[in-house]
Image (tube, rainbow, N blue to C red; front, side):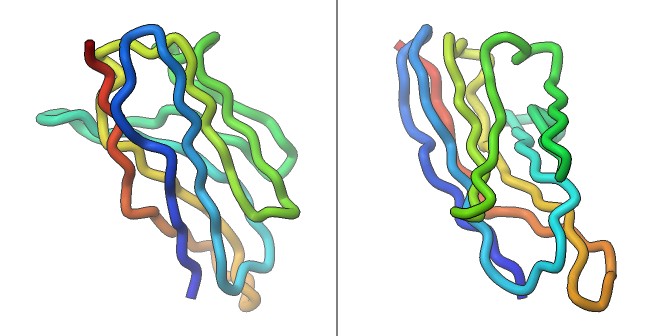
Length: 120
């Protein structure tokens, strides 16, 4: 069973920075992509950033130039570096991993979410 553990959320002032981490464990044959999503109160969950197995990245227009997604395969961890944070970035951030298990089934797993609050 694959599990994700997220960390790094918290309260930050506008213009500040935070780095989120997402560590995975369990039986994974190959990771296809790791991504970060967010959900603000009263809004639908949206994609923030994704990084593929080939290290290609894609970002929501609202975070381009401010957020950076990366991964450390040795540490089995993905990161989301968030700079120049704005109040509208306030949300619960969820990590998502799309992977193949050892039966070559395409599966995905979600983290529990970490709250990011941007406020003065």
